[in-house]
Image (cartoon, rainbow over all chains, first blue to last red; front, side, top):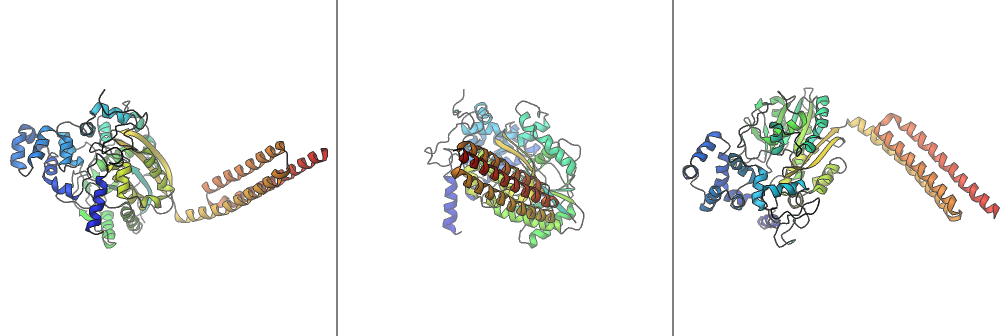
Length: 155
Length: 382
């Protein structure tokens, strides 16, 4: 595969809606953000961060961009992903705050955890209409597999 | 000699670990998933492997972005549970098998799989949850473990076909190892799931079931699944299924499925447990020969039946047609059942099965005679 073909392959993945494949570009973009998340896998760091969030970021991760920093402080989970975070690293930060994968998914999808969980209990999100940005103008359907109910809004 | 006797495909959802650790397995949310695990655990207790080669992925726990090996192998005597942000899971230390692990590393590298050799490796939920699922909650793990970590976090990740070939070399290495060891191979992760972005929660049971079926029916199809297909159709994190391909590649040609459980959801994920046993090659060859013979006989029976039907069909009144149909249907059905049975029981009984199938041909002949005579009588009446 030459340079152009590799770029074309990467572009193909970007055609999938609501998906930010953790590729080399995002790995480079999100390196310090992910390294911050990674640091949360140590108890002493968790304690230090929770005691002084801004101070921890200033001294340990000065290379975070201002938007990455904002996302961390505001718990903007989808924002972190868009800034190059990888979900597995992000989960270390989530765990530090007592947040599960399911909670973060509820936040990233904008559905809220309870509503998202109900969709999962109803067979999960449908495939049809969610395979290409062309399917639904880039929007992701929140329809469940089993009953076909729309779980896009809470309640 | 060491031998690979079985392969296990198993999801490794963190929430399953949390349910184990917090004693929630009988909770209404979790019980339908956990109901499928005692069967697998019973199989494991009976199978008594000495070593499990566990093809899994680290989730940024022990392997961070500082160093990203595509394929890594743990060669240490033991592996500690990793801290994933909640503190390490309170599961037993995972014991290694250093001698076999080093032999695997050597064989893989000599065969052009450039492994990263890990003398220190903390193991995360990707490895310990499949162990809980197949062993339950235990004080000590019942077998030694060789972790093989695959990068499925940062793209490009290795293809399913590449993982399959890794599995083939794993098999070659195990079979060349002089110690008598009962070895099983795990492929972990999957099945369909996405856990990032707005598309989180996508589940594709059709994809999953076809994948599970084809592990035994048509594994060559699975080798060809591209990354784009995994991501688009099974969710971005469904790509973990490439690790199942390493497991399947290590089992060789002849396998049979002995256990399967599939459930949606486990938190964000479709979860599965499948167990396949490998078959002795000589036994498998005998079986294949038996299958061939019986297939031939069945073909003959069916052809005969069709001929009878055709012959009778053109000149026989409706009632007689029904009789013929019934007779033919019964006969071919029986022949098929015999084939199935014969193949299941392997070689020795083929002759008997062939004989029985021959008898059925006889029965069809007599059915045909009956049809003819009825038809004849009807004609005479007219």
